[in-house]
Length: 114
Length: 113
Image 1 (cartoon, one colour):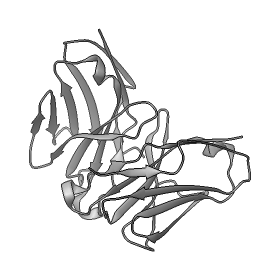
Image 2: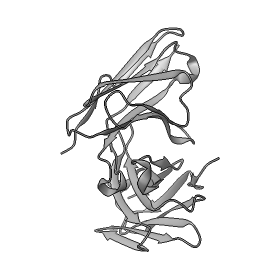
Image 3: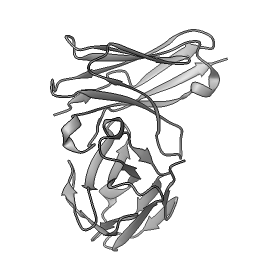
């Protein structure tokens, strides 16, 4: 079974803080993704990575950065948290070409920025 | 520019009846479509998928239909069960774009006993 874990289920931060969200997958997947989920907007892609040290912007990268130093780990960084970044953050991984990219998700991190 | 749209935010169905969730897309380059199910406080889980070379795919109580000319897909659940109550997302991808998925807004299904 594919396992994707996220470092925290719930997080409360102050405006202006630097926030790190960690994601680890144990199935040697090349692709990893970060989304945020907001009511009425579905899942929106923030960043993704095809390989170690590779990163690509998604649809809403502003205010975020990512790091992929090891294949199994993909970190999302909020450089200076703002209240509009309060959201559910979801990490996913996939194998290129397998099921045209069926993604496996972690449990999510619900972030509240005060 | 919402390339994948789920126009019904919510759907309520009686247990044992059929649930039909709909999804429309605008990009004719999409060649693979997926449905995910999400319970509160959990990540989405893959449910069923369909390639654009097919018009139907069935897996137990779940069937996905694809109408390429209308750029429309639907997920049928029959019979519906209370445990099916969740948010359902449809997603689409283009095969040679490395697995990037475009998701719809989601439809919250409530199956009442």
